[in-house]
Length: 102
Image 1: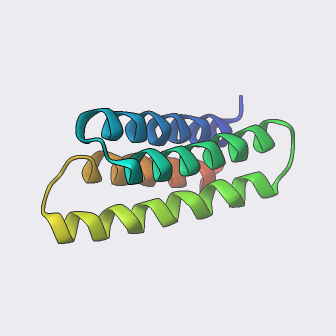
Image 2 (image 1 turned 30 degrees about the horizontal axis):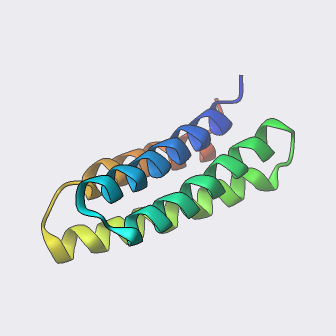
């Protein structure tokens, strides 16, 4: 079982679903677009990992780190924990799962 791939795919699903929820709740096209793009890229990175492409790990890690930074900045600016805190925590868990071999 490839824990890094599962973590990357899970984070991708969270990002994708979060973008859709953000759009349906507040009609935020930015949420839909950014959640869709980052979610699809993470799903692709997870798929690459499952098929044996080592660089899929690094792609997933780079996207996770970028999302962690984006949501940390968002949390600091807005002081609103949703959706920043869950996305930060999921990103950190995903990054750890990618980097730490199990």
